[in-house]
Length: 308
Image (cartoon, rainbow, N blue to C red; front, side):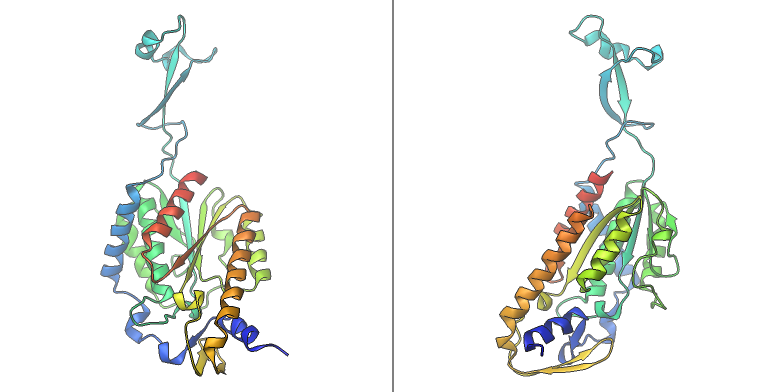
């Protein structure tokens, strides 16, 4: 027979919510213009630490000088830099930074469990996920890259140019129809970056199967785990009745006695998530909706830059 703490852990990991904390209908999504403006604001902040592609190739920006290799055309030599060389008969070639467009694909978890918040002063997990999705897309578009979604009517398509951000936002905010449990990996082009944004309150076996599927394809995978602070720490007390977003009702007494066991279970779950991600060469960043999203997005943005 399961203990109350085991029951509660499983209940939350199947993404339930408290009736008393149910979000209002107005909290389900941000207005489109406000969401786009906020995403653009965050993207501008990310650009202050923007990643470069830092590879030689066709482009306009200088990258580095390197020694001339025998057999290369003489027109590739930078004669002015070679004349300054302290080493006699040393010739130098000017390299430029490669500017080929990269592709960023984002899967924003559309499941009902994301439509939850523990307090009216907080955004739902879905709202924060949508904001992070558009901020990352905006930063990619600003950098001359292509960006696309793996949810909604625009699923699988990539776009270039900053003017497409409202279109991506409208697609993201459209009420979801039947969506797959996982991103459709067949829609992700080879050598793209895939960002998966979810609460990842999944069974460990499901997480491992998903990451195994990602690692079997020529894509770079990054995880952004978004959780409500009440999912990180159990601070409720007394008798509470929970109603499931996807069905089911659970009433638990003496919530304060379950806190330590629940927090230990959640920490174990997050450790397993990070361990699975590391084993499959994926990045994993955890974000709390009570915190500013910029630090988590900056860390993810730098990870995206490093993968390039």
